[in-house]
Image 1 (tube, rainbow, N blue to C red):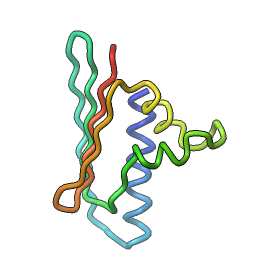
Image 2: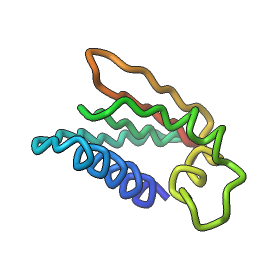
Image 3: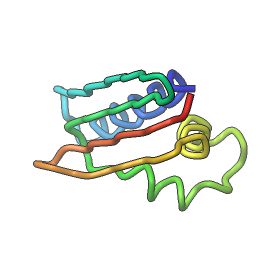
Image 4: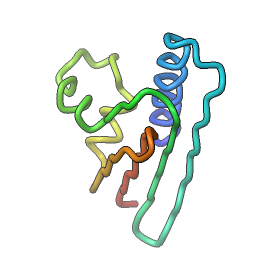
Length: 96
């Protein structure tokens, strides 16, 4: 599930960078696992994009569209998004 989410989010960042002709893209993925929780974080320096708002708008799209975002958002116990210094920061907590 996390792999599907990482792939979809990374493709999204790269597509937005390509549209703006940005050649240097930085994406930082981190995965933390404790006894009962998986914490996934992602930071990128691309166009601002809040996947929580996106999910709210597109949660009822066809089954094949945005499946990575939808799957993780539905499984997550908590999702935090914030923007600092023009970066996207996403933290997702999923119970194991």
